[in-house]
Image (cartoon, rainbow, N blue to C red; front, side, top):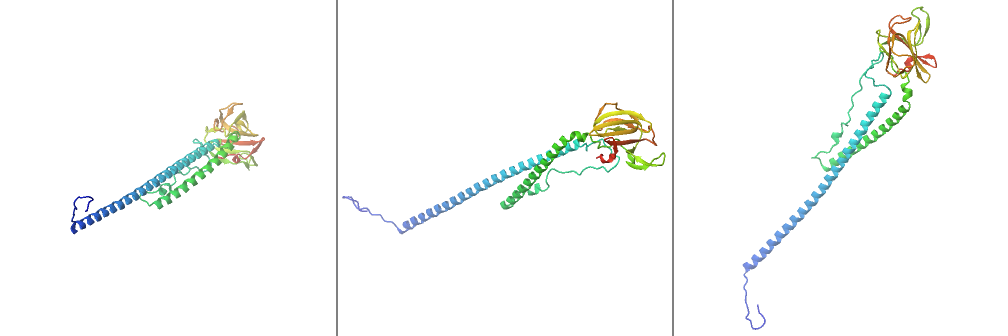
Length: 302
């Protein structure tokens, strides 16, 4: 090194070993820096991938929450539908725990479940692949939407039926649609041979045989028109139900109502007996429309 001025020249000697060591050190530093750069890029990539997975998991959780909410809403609709059905049955007087029909089978409707058996099968598993989870979520979403749509249509139909029945409630409650007493029919409405004369004659009602003292109930709402004794019919009750419909009960052993009383469907009005012209304990039951006897079986729903 030759400096300016009068300073003396300085000499430095660098050996081959020193140069080789410097080159080796430089290369080592370069390799380390390159490795650190690659590792950093890998860490950044993993971090970005983890962020994406977290976002996807959050999205899946959000979708599951929405589907669970939708299923819950659908179950609520189904519950409301069942309540509507119960109300309709009560309005139609088809759910009477005390009834014991004389004719026709009785049974219990099959049990139903509010949860779809496929709901659990469609839920995504934790260890499943993303594609499998998305497929299951799509199937579950389709099932939930289908249940919601069907429940909505059913609820709307039942609501319309409820509105109709409420509008017709008075007429329905005044229609003699239940059995007036427990027993078995021994003589139908129509022509038959008279048990006393043997001649073929018109039988204007139903004969329901049962034990003496068996309660006789009103088959519909109405007002008692008369309670009297008839030579042939014995102790009788006549009830006016409105809409030109009336009912007659004959051969009673006792009468529990008085003329002018308002009676409700299912209320006891008397008891089966053997009064009047009768061959044994039974209830003679007639339905009149505009004063003309008609077949009571056309009105009995139970």
